[in-house]
Length: 91
View (cartoon, one colour):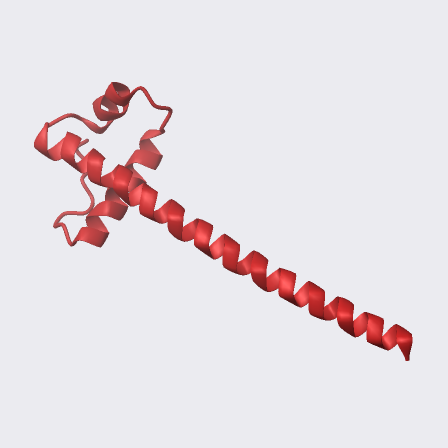
């Protein structure tokens, strides 16, 4: 009987921790998406308003960001802001 009670308590602890893990990871993913969108907003400003290429915008910032990541972030910002032409293959 004690073994069953101990096993049930352990299962409850594991279940609580697994739920906490899932919630924490979901919050992290949401925060990353918000920050990626902010980066995308700035990239839109640099490429559309200041007419820089995506490569130039990244180079000016002095950050380590691949062109693929920059495109993804810019497209995320475009899709969430309702911008037209979310895929710009010229930059």
